Structure formats: C-alpha cells, structure tokens
Length: 315
Image (cartoon, rainbow, N blue to C red):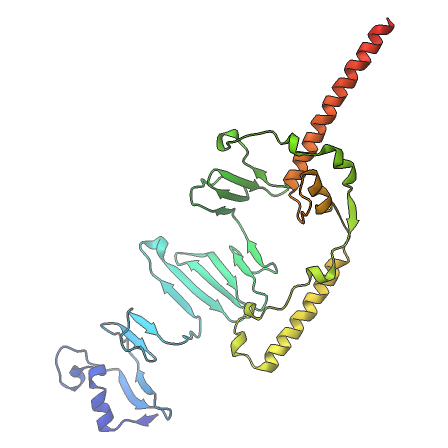
C-alpha cells in the first residue's frame, strides 16, 4: 500500500474525524494503523477496531444516498456470508445465507435455524421450500400449498387448495382429480344443457390410441431463461445453446414415442356444436356422459314399461 502525502491526508480529515487531529465532536481512532491508496487509485484503510457512519453511505458514484446503504453495482460477501435482517419482534428476524459449495441460497428465521426457504441457485434452476436439496424444479416439504387469487380464502387441511372468491378446488395425495366447489349457492342462470348435447353423435366419437407429433412438442431455445446470457461470450452462448438443444431434442423424442389413449377434440366438439374445437375440457366429457346415462335410463324405463304391458297381456 502506498503511503499518503500530507495533502491527501488533509483531504481525508472530514472522513476520519477532527478529533484525530485535535478537532471537536468526532471520535478518535486509536486502532488506525495505516491509511493509503492502491495503485488503481482506491482508498485503503487498516483498522483493527469497530467503525460506523452517522448517516447514509453511498458507494460507487452514489453521491446522495436515499437509504442507509446504497450501492451502484454488485456486492460480494465472503466467508460464511450471512446477511441478518432485523424486523419488528423476534419473529421478524431473518438470515440470508449463500452456500457456494451446494449452490443453495437459504432464508432462515434467525431464532429458529432450519425453518427456512431455500433457493437452489444452480443451472437446473430448482426451487426448494422447507428442504435443502431436490432434483425437482419445485420441492415443498412439510406443509400445504394454497393459491389464493383474490385474498379471501380461508385455508383448509388439504394438500393443495386453489381459490378465487367463492369458487375453489382442492386436492390431496392419492386422489386422481381435484374436488371443486359446485354449490347452487354460488351459481345463477341455471339451465339444462341437454338440448345443446347431440347424444346421437356419441357413436362417432371413439377413443383412440396416438402419439404426439415431435414438431409440436419440442420447445424453442429461449436465451431469456439463461441467467447472465448477455454478459457471456459468443463461444459460451453457443456451448449452452447446443447443450440445451441436445437435451430438449432427447426429451421431446422420448415424449413423442409414448403411446396415449384419449379423444380427438374436433370429434368430441361436434357433440357440443363446436366444429373447430382443438381442446377438450374433461369436465364437459363427464357431463356429456352423465346426460347419456340419463338418456339410457329413460329409454330403459320405457322398455321396462312395454315389457310389463306385454307380460300383462299374456295372462
């Protein structure tokens, strides 16, 4: 470290405090061992005691900081690397900690270490809540998941709950489908739909086996999903792009080779008067089947009545 000249030292007096030089109302610095400038022009201070500022501090060009610390650029923490956030009351205190070895950023309650939210900041982009490792894109350990669209939902005891006002859906492990709200208390303009369903066309809608087309399921490379893409060299970008394309092609090819069983949306849409349908709402499929069962039940009732009349006439 290069020693300061007298002129430079005089310029630092407002920063270090007048009391060091016999002035009033600023603290002395008995632990100050050396002040100097680096070859790049930066300021270096060797200090063995505690230090603090009685105001806001701006760094890297911030001349009028709006907060206690304002930095124009990146910040780096080494060692343990914890950031302690003090809130109101003990429950509001949190740690933010990064682990370079595991690639995990954790947010802990300061008073209950281990009750944390952890973000796995690696190339896989995995997010972990309540656990410390995962191979899934999103892992939630030890709790329920609630999605409350409008903020009015009262949580229940189901594993997954989705709410929007009076309508809600819920799902528990082991169930094949969502349970949804369907009370007449939340409905109006209730009308039969049977007249809109062409049950005679059900014979033309067949369950089929099929594969999805490769060109329809393969995804296009999107550099916006890659962190730091704009700061990479062309060679780095090409390497990442090639690796992603190889992985995506393999995934899409595997999916394209799978056999599926289902309905053709255009065929089913004709039952509901939708000639150009490209999607199927399986709740509507269930309702069509419901009406078909009702229709069969009525036909059976008519046949049973005819059979009873014929048997009566033979007596």
